[in-house]
Length: 71
Image (cartoon, rainbow, N blue to C red; front, side, top):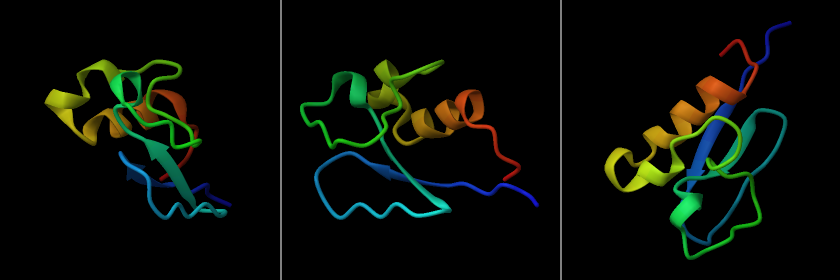
């Protein structure tokens, strides 16, 4: 069976859905004024500090380096 993960990027407080396929992640958490109490793109191998330049791509980079999934 293949493992599928769908990242859902968050940058401010709001509705957070987490289930067997959806993975909420706070983008730009390194410099954010909010702590959304979900995983952030600032752990492991990351470029969270560059979120102002790359926007949600910091979450894509983070998932590439830190999540083990097929899709």
